[in-house]
Length: 259
View 1 (cartoon, rainbow, N blue to C red):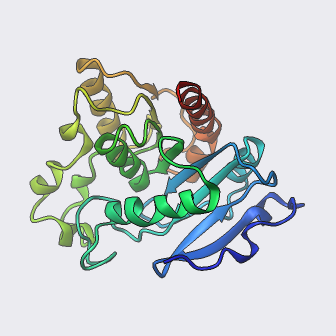
View 2 (cartoon, rainbow, N blue to C red; view 1 turned 120 degrees about the vertical axis):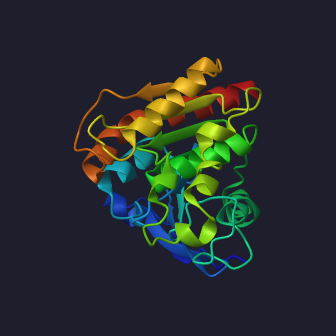
């Protein structure tokens, strides 16, 4: 299942981007950030957006991973929306969410001896809604989650010729699987944070709708809907990176203290 990690474990890099390496899991590319310390403090599973932009060339996130001594695992899920539904663009039989739980989580456990609930979730855009979906379905496994500009109302893109069209029969079919309509009042991630730029025309309303649903259900969460730094863009994602990583670090510390 796993290819050799090879250069993954190396001496402290002079350039923080040198901490990245690429491996194969089930013949799919996975980018790995290994901090210079041989014993990491924790692990982040990062889910990318629809543009499939990872973090291996991102100095902002890389420096934060290094500073907090965190491993980051960033799999390529195509444009599958990270749902628990088969996406022909991803795999004809296995859903991307199944793959994360059945292959990526065991990969992390095998190589770093870090297991849930000490694996935090982080995502942007499509991946932001993906980590929320994963955390709400498996709240005990993933109690720590941070979503930047999550595309909560992803059903709005149905009918635009995207792989999403092959996953659902209609926009309403897709809407029924949005995280807003699948909250469980007794099973939710205990340490969740999400944020969205108020200038994000596509996804801001969905994020506020999620916040209202959480509040009305008495579910605890943290949010930032005030900070503006470029709309739905990497300028904003990078600007919010420190807040998201701080939330994750505090959450992982709390989980460790409870164990």
